[in-house]
Length: 194
Image (cartoon, rainbow, N blue to C red; front, top):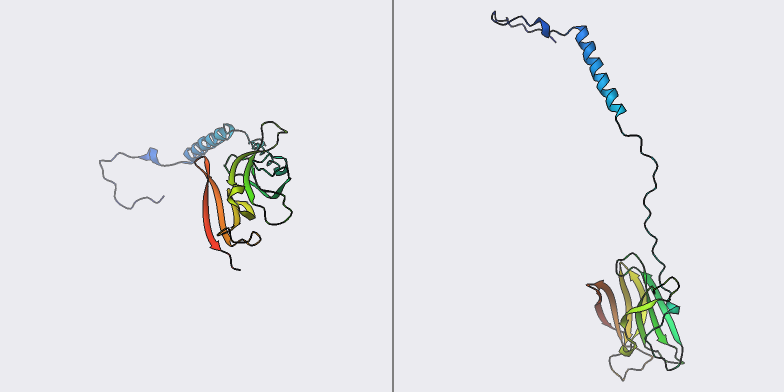
């Protein structure tokens, strides 16, 4: 530090004790070193390698073929035509969506779309918790998928009873999302071109 060139007033006492000497610097450095060393000793130990908490593994999606569907086939067999899985209700476990129809020798049998959840018990078959499309609606289902927690499908149907069953003339892009304790449907309707 450079001394001031201004004259010192006569009434000020001599401040000789404020001039830093090597002993003062040595004492200050020793005190700072002691504080740093003490802080280092009081630090918590190094973090041990602890395993991150493991989230419970979701249960597998219910098997579509083993479920009991509310579909009357007059003694005939049922066919699971399509299936898709995904977490639809946000509980971390996947549900299965199945397109099921009665086997038919010819024509296009109407389909049902069902949501399955795990049955009670480890080996229990999946159980139907929702019917998204009932066979009585006379729709065929294509393009089934589960994306972003919603069910997406294409429904093919008929504008009148005069339309041959081989050739549906209506097409709907539909989706269902779980909201407020129920599946809510959204639809985009389009006519099929012949």
